[in-house]
Image (cartoon, rainbow, N blue to C red):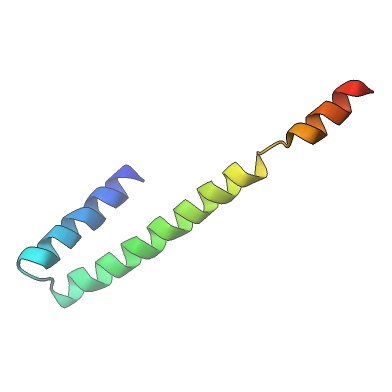
Length: 62
């Protein structure tokens, strides 16, 4: 994900300085979609692995 983010940032800096070609705009949009999909997947995995303290206490009491 690091290389993906590096390329997105590179294209962002280029857009702010000289602008992007049509191909670069398309690439940027695709990279952003990939980044967001990965981010959502990672975030969902983190949420799925959360254990509530109440649940853990209930299982240890029995």
